Amino acid sequence: MKAIICGALLTLTITTANAADDLDRANYLLPYCKLTATERLANTENAYFNGRCEAIVQTVSAVLGMLKYAEALFTACADLPYNERT
Image (cartoon, rainbow, N blue to C red):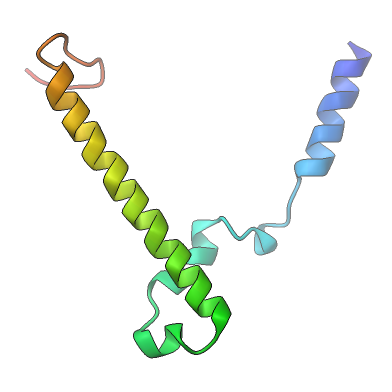
């Protein structure tokens, strides 16, 4: 029991990150999604994070498209639990 508590506390200590330095937060990435073409090319950081933002948006869009396709395939066999069809 003592080892589990020590392990949990160690994990919390290691994984605690400052929110201002968290580059994966939407609040950090969103300004880069809104850059104009000239702002993107102003420096490499702008270009990198703008590309990262676009890639995330494209990935989410592709996954949602696949989910719609999968739902269309499998609803003939069984109704998915999260569907609210009447």
